[in-house]
Image 1 (cartoon, one colour):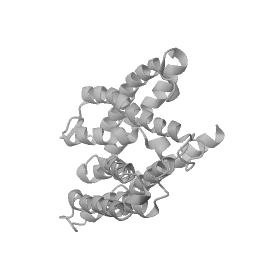
Image 2 (spheres, one colour):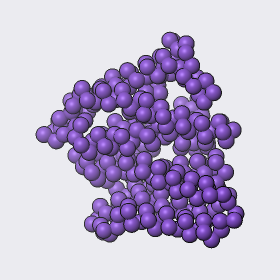
Image 3 (cartoon, helix red, strand yellow):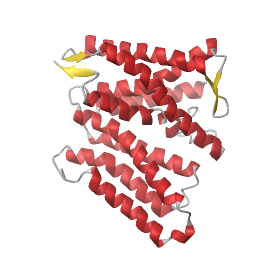
Length: 280
């Protein structure tokens, strides 16, 4: 327990520093590192790391997909968008497949491509927030992470006191239906509190749509749960306890960000259409 707490505190300090530097290269490098790290953990769990050249191409794309935003911030290479370098990435993987098709089954290259695009898409949603929402980008990231993580805490306590019916006993034995319901409600309330503090004390130049935040906060719970359970299935099939040990007591990047990867694109969309917050 002591190791778990210390590890969480260290991660919190690092997160605060990175968010404080949200409009600098430090932020983009940190998100790129998370994206590449998450991919590495998935590839390792699935036995795909034995294809080093293909994996390096995937890691390169994942990093580039984040770091290009930093370059775009300086009005450089504005015409180089995801469709172009995405095409280059997919073409390289397909070329490797055509060159060495005898050494692996057809599912390998398409799994590599699918995982890379999915993971990159999720972390890119976080990386875009400071650029796309300059007036409240850091808040958008904080609310997104809260939407993914706070439901877990609410579900834990609700499940501990009221949990009777297992949600997915084979995939995640500790999760209960009562816990999920409790976590969903708690998530809406806590996101409402986070938004209220932000609007009252930090940024009074924005209009926060509290009812929408509450409802979408509750919706983040099942969306995050999908990512959580999907990542758990991979662990069960790979017969591993954790994806890594980068955070002692917590596991790897995927263990911490599995729910974030489904919540982040959803929250980015909500912020982009002005559903949660607008400038006065």
